[in-house]
Image (cartoon, rainbow, N blue to C red; front, side, top):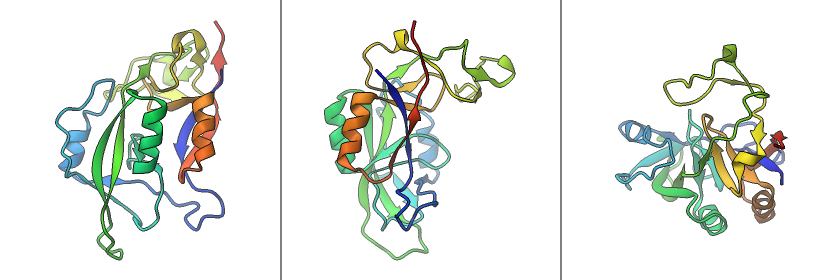
Length: 198
């Protein structure tokens, strides 16, 4: 089975190609979001949290939080992914609004994804980190240089997960194909990830 790195972007023919469509969460909301490290559910989420983006009139189904790699889903994509991999994510609703200097449009609900399935599956023999130091930074992340190699034996049957010590969200090949077939806007399957068979 193959595995792929999930990211966000736009098809080349879209007018917004080349722009970052990332949602910004202003304090004090951001301070509460530092708890989003997984694999624990967040129990005290403020459902009135607001996120802003450069142009909320341009609808996407998938993006990330600005300055972080927390996934953000539209209601349509959330429903689809939840059906594919129930229990792998906690979906935290927030109100998406336009930047103040943009034309006012009605706010809509989107969902911040707290990925609950975190798999420690890095092949440390093949993956490079800064100064060969595997000590996590204060945010729990490794300073990876170059591609992250995975060990197949440590992944087991997981279909959607975050690699422990990285912000990387990974899709198994069957999930990747089902998501691609739906044509969600903003979804980019970046590359096949290298895997060690052991």
